[in-house]
Amino acid sequence: MKKTYNKLVRDKIPEIIKDSGAHCEYHVATGDELKEALFNKLAEEVREFMEDPCVEEMADIQEVLWGIQDFFNLSEYQILAAVHSKAEDRGRFEKGYILEHVMDN
Image 1 (cartoon, rainbow, N blue to C red):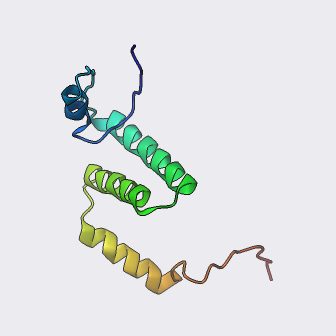
Image 2 (image 1 turned 30 degrees about the vertical axis):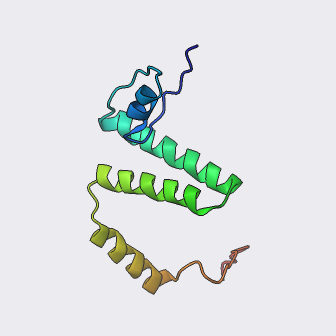
């Protein structure tokens, strides 16, 4: 029986499938295909975390974020500098504020 996925998987998945005695077909995504696959995988992993908020699902989200970071050639230093700058200028998400309305003067 052939099951179709057409989604980004972790690097060792084809080898794991082969070692199980099954056969799989895959290709290496690049460029726009890889970017779209990473964004789709991020959405998938976030949905899974929302259904089951646990450390394993958060780890999957982080792994995809690292893949996106690599794709866009962003250094950890750049990201952390932006995190700190935004936290300094606009705050964090610690207090749980929900903005309801803004009225012009």
